[in-house]
Structures are given as C-alpha cells and as structure tokens.
Amino acid sequence: MRRKITISELVAAAEQRGCPIWQVVLEREERLQGTERQDIWHKMKEYWMVMKGSLDAGTKPGNRSLSGLVGEEGALLTRYIEKTKPLSGYGSVLAAARAMGVAVVNASQGRIVAAPTAGSCGILPAVLATVAEETGAVEDAVVGALFTAAGVGMVIDEHAGTAGAKSGCQAECGSASCMAAVAAAEMAGGTPRQAANAGALALKNFLGLVCDPVAGLVEIPCVKRNAIGAGVALLAADMALAGIESKIPLDEVIQAMKEIGDAMPASLKETSLAGLAGTPTAREIEKRMNEID
Ligand code: SF4
Image 1 (cartoon, protein in one colour):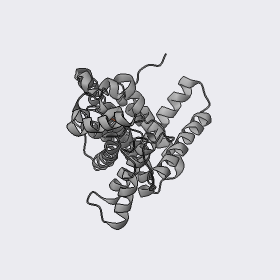
Image 2: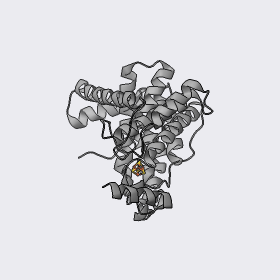
Image 3: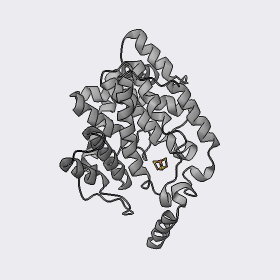
Image 4: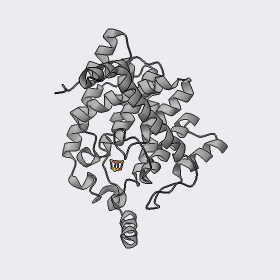
C-alpha cells in the first residue's frame, strides 16, 4: 500500500539530494509501480502530447460547447493580445486564453488530460506551455514539470481530495493552480522550497471557492475559472521566485482546504443548488437548457 507523502517530505528529499522535485516523484513512481523509468517517462510524454493537442484546438476560432454556453473565449483573448498590450502582461493573458481554450475543448467533449480534474484541465497545460516559451525550456523540461505537478496533485488528493463534489472548486481549480505554480516555479529555476511556496501562495487564494456549475454543466463558471487559475499560478510562481514565502506551509494550506471542504454545505458542492448556479440568470439558462432537452 502507498504511504501518504507530504509536500515537506518531497521538498526535503529533493534538497537532500540536490535534485528537482520531479526527480523525486519519478523515482518514487518507479519504485511503487515497479515499472521502468523510461516507460513512466514515455507515458507522461504522451499526456503532454494530448495536452498540446488541446492547447492547439482550444485557441482556434469556431469552438463551441455542446450546450453553446461557451466556445470562443480562448480565441477572443488570443486575438485581444495580438492587437493590444494587455494590462496583466502578455504571458499571463496568453496562459489565460490557453486555459480557457482547453476547458472549452473539455466542454465540447474533446480530448483533454484531467489535471487534476476535467473541470480544471486547462490550467496546468496553459501555464507549462507559457513558461516553456518564456524560458526557452525544451520539451523534456515540460515533461519533468508534469511530474512535479503530478507529485503535488497526488499529495493534495491523498490528504484532502481533488473533487468539486467533495470539497468545492478550491479542490479543482485551486489544486490545478497550485500544481501549476509549483511546476512553473521549478521549471523557471526555482529551488524546491521556492516551488512549494509558489504552490501555497496560489492555493491560499482559492480557499473557500465553491463548486456551483450553472445548469450542472462544467462550463459556467468553470471555463473562466481556468483562466484566472492560470494567471494566479504564474503570479504565485513569480512571487516565490522573488523570495516571497508563504508563512503557512503548503501542507497546512492543503489541510485547511480539506477542513473548509468538509464544512461546506452540500448545496455548494457540484449540486447546482446555490452559489452562481442559484442566481436568476443561471436559473433562466437552466430552464432554456431543459426546454431544448
Ligand atoms: S465549478 Fe465545480 S465543476 Fe466547475 S471547475 Fe469548479 S469544481 Fe469543477
């Protein structure tokens, strides 16, 4: 049986050995799965290829979810930064556009990688693709970063859970943003400790976020939450790389997320009974959807 590992243990192991977190995660998987390292690496590379496909598809014009509620967001923001100097910086907005694009691919039943969930699938690939471009990282560095993100996701899943139905959107978009922040900071040359700080800075800002999908569809507010999740991850990584620390360590932020999720009412955990799903506009949309059915 797998022993639950913590972020501080991952960081300590990486520091002791003078290696990045991704290497600790990869070697642990090798031991636990009893699979050759190159096979595990190859599998992760395949996931990155699927992510790349969804990044390409998501930012093209003409996308539309099955319900028609979302579709062009990624393409619109991509066009915007082609013509305008964005207020929040080119990289952040590009990542946001990409994140929405991938989330729309999910809402259109296209191929994505749940990272950690389908609803939050845009954040991690969008951030990694953008950081790779900004830093000139090669593809293997992105695959390595995916192992770092996977290690963080595994810790969150084991200690708190990553399902909106269990702990709200903090556990989906919050976890994805946290995973992306840690991976981005490490990919950009940060130490394991800085990377963990980036994750804590990101996740803290999603605590309490409820899961309230309009009409029960993973579209509103999910697609746009992916955009903001990507932006938060990049900013958190920059803050950590600048030397800013989270006074509350990531393991404790994860524990706080669990406690908040446990205290959250069922009406705010993917039941579409309250929150944004309970607003008059959402009810109108729901009525229209039911009429189409
Ligand atoms: S609102 Fe709920 S369904 Fe949508 S991304 Fe967040 S957790 Fe997932």
